[in-house]
Structure formats: C-alpha cells, structure tokens
Image (cartoon, rainbow, N blue to C red; front, top):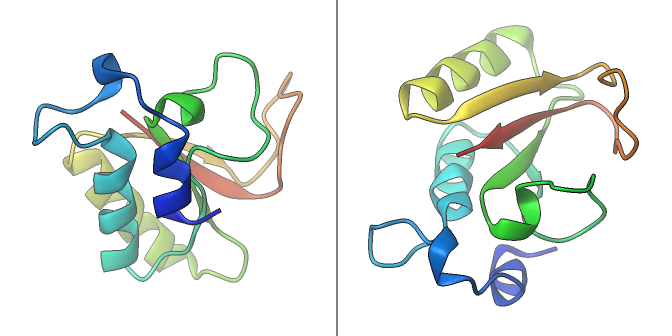
Length: 107
C-alpha cells in the first residue's frame, strides 16, 4: 500500500504528531528510506488487534536480503530518533498475524 493511500485511512487528530499535524509513520518512512530500507507496511494490510499501524504510529521494514550491518545501523538510527524498534526477523511468540521477517518500528 502506498504511503499516500495509507494516509487516507487514518484521520484521528489525536494520533497526529505535533509537527504540522503529520502522522508519526511519515517520519519513520522518511528515516527508513534515508537508510536505503524498504517499507513493507504502514497503515494498511492485516495486523494484530490493537496494532499501532491502523493509527498511523507504526511501519514494518523488510529485513530479507539486507546485510546485518545495514540493519544494525538503521535500528540504531531509529532508536536515536526516538522510535521503538522490535526485531521480528523470527515470529514472536503468540503473534497471530505475522507477514514474515521484518522490523516493526513504532512511536
């Protein structure tokens, strides 16, 4: 799902960041792209109940085929930017919906 299309699905003012009313996932997408990462999910698709994706507060980033050094560099940068990084290269226990190996970035 494109970032523009995903934005139309999330309209809650309470979930917008203070910076110009922008949803948090947009900054996460910019950071991922700046590090040459591929964003595989923003607000669309299937997610677990209570997921932050539907509120515009999480993205998933592809890990398949990405060198460990590049992943580690991106994870450090995401944490330094104030994002929570959950490494889901292995399916987390109890995770009902899982789309395969990825990093889950949230705010």
